[in-house]
Amino acid sequence: NENKHHPEQVLFKRLVDASGYVFYNTSEFDFKKLLNDPNNLESNLKSYILAFSANVIDILENFEIFKKLQKYINIIPILAKGDCYTP
Image (cartoon, rainbow, N blue to C red; front, side, top):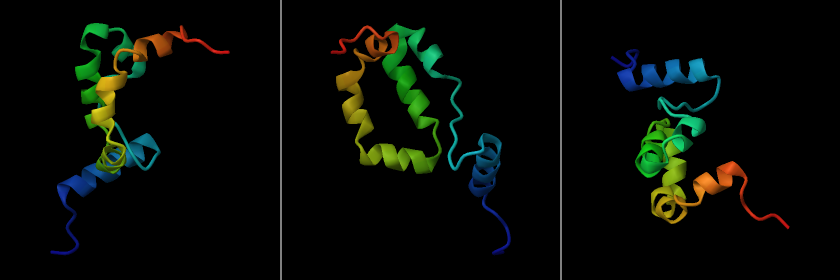
């Protein structure tokens, strides 16, 4: 039946409505929680990224985010603290 919604579409609509944006993230993490666990930052950040809605994942994949993540994972806590050089 064409009038029936797929469960994924219903979930997407509910989560988008709840977030107030055209995307959502269902992760338990926020940036503060991510930075509070530096030993697991990489795996937790990947988990956080994968908890975004499919439309955001598509954008991030176009930017090859997971290939670049390994390169920058060690400087994220430094940048978050503001301990970086600014001329």
